Length: 316
Image (cartoon, rainbow, N blue to C red):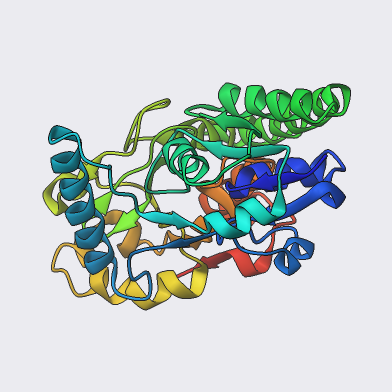
């Protein structure tokens, strides 16, 4: 079977199921495990991602506005990503993995359909993933397993992930018993501010915190500084979608220069952390389990010794 993955989380699922040797092409966001970096790239963003958070947000909103106008006028809808259709045709995939969850986060099903319309003779199976909460992620793992004839392996993986989360919850429950849960806010974007949604509130719960910013199964909400001040979290975690730790550090001054920043309880008490939002919290794949462990480490610090990836976490 010849597989193309245009979704980073799907690529990690494919690897977990032992099918990496069948992967022939990837998206520009598929960067783990490291072996996939040798594979040809089928997509690229049409916006400048090397600029500030504010400018990235502005570009996305302008493109979304143009896309809405195109749809109203029955024109071809615009996308944030472009697919190399000539390379796609040369690779001749039997199956393509993509997603319908968020057109900003990754190549969408619509992008794939448009790319296939521009090629001739390609009739691959297109499998779209659409996770909004943890249960959806596990179902997507089964969907990938079925598509690759690895359903039993997928079930075993899911059981392992769930057991690790339950073990983490047992550890944090003992800490919660001694007092109230710390009130936690995760920011998925920094300028403008955006809270956390979808599966992140569930991960915070496993980590022993009380999520105060966003709802399970719903996209992350935009926030004003006044709203963040009113929430006044005990723990504040910065994990912008698609950003590494170093990229987040570049935009940190955007927050620090705001007059409200220094008034926040989490800032005053030294309970602000950075987590790699690209590899972990915002990638709906196997490493969501490690994401919960990183959250627990950020919430409880020395009270809960955990083995976490040191490159994925910084306490300010």
